[in-house]
Length: 275
Length: 289
Image (cartoon, rainbow over all chains, first blue to last red; front, side, top):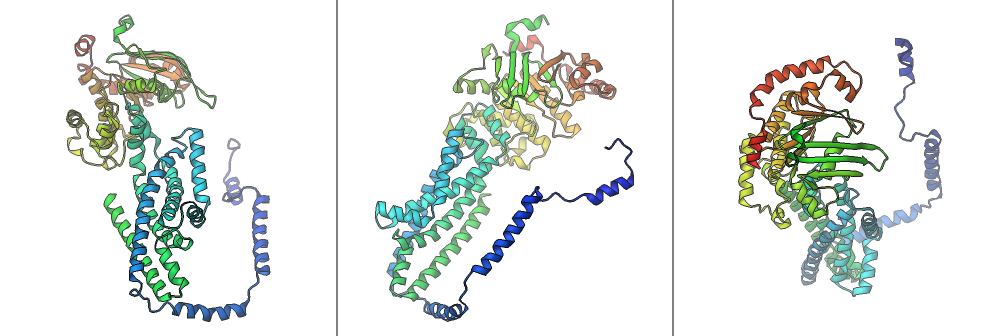
């Protein structure tokens, strides 16, 4: 092509024909996806039944429901609230530590660049199972197994932590610079030394960030798990809602928000100090 | 050739070494190579000729398909993991992109060369023997990084990083250096400084070295012996002076080599003379061993 006397006109003609490469190469697939998506959207709008009268009525109910939360009452059930919060904080700390201790080895096993195939597949399936089941479902199972109370909730959160931290840490391990690991192996260090010197410094910031974020999630989740009987502040919240003590529920919700914000602030400080 | 047949001088012997990757590529074809104590060999050849594979087969980072590697007369191929780690301690490796632990300090990087000598918990808590730390300070001083010990590796320039890489390799107290494209990421002046440093340190310590390098002029300027690899087979093995246009063509294929050879000769005149006297000779090495 280029050997046959390329002229300026020929290049201009080629330039006019050039198009940026499309996201989906096959035009048939591309257009059927676009048209299919549009058809689905139209169908969804047509078949969705919206009762506008009911929605208008519901607005007033919503406002009344929200008004029932005011003013928040921190006092009358303060003992229950304090106990529930303490239980939630304990569940959070224990489940995060336990979950992290389990998720680090699972993440190493689930990293394609470190683990042999059978171990990789085994660890990946642990991660998949852990992430497939929503916390509430797992909590129901654990409540059935271990009875009502914070033990079931703690185990649930630890289990969920493994799926979350394990997956994201494994991905970070797979993205590490292989040369550093190779260099550590070349010194004659053991496998564990190569891992803690060649890999750990590279994934440490990510591991720290994930751990702090997970503290946050575990605390928030502990508020939900109480609803299915797995202990924590959620149990207190659930009780207050059942008794129509919305002012106490409001106080609990405000405290949860406050603690999550404190977590957020603390994790920022810790991250800055550690890096 | 006759003095090289003395067995006690051979630090490395590679015999009929072949490597076929799972993809089917034959990276090495029955390579025979012998490196004597104190000998610095430049390994040249086009990309994909198998230079990296060859030095990685020596310390078994890559498992050869067949053939034998002997370090000081002991077979390295087929060792169990513990014995292999002991053998690796005696072979320091220096890398193209330095391969430092970027987030650790210069001192920690230097001490990582001692991983094969200390237990896991000692290395975890950085409790290296005081003599190791002192040696690291001495070596950092030797390469001109005395006041950098507590800097993080990623704060250093390319030349400084490669110096840390050299210190790490020497911390192993090796008998052989495996050097993989040490200057590929460095500018021409720094490249020469690094090559000169490696050569000086080899001479000071009676170390043998295999240096993979794609800069032919640099190889001619610094190495005592040049080995040319093409498609996984050795096609040239001789003194830098005997590497002529015909030899380069046999290694790389047809090209006009006059500039490459001319430059190499000129550089050699300027750079080689002051350090010639420091190159090791057999008698001095016998004393060191």
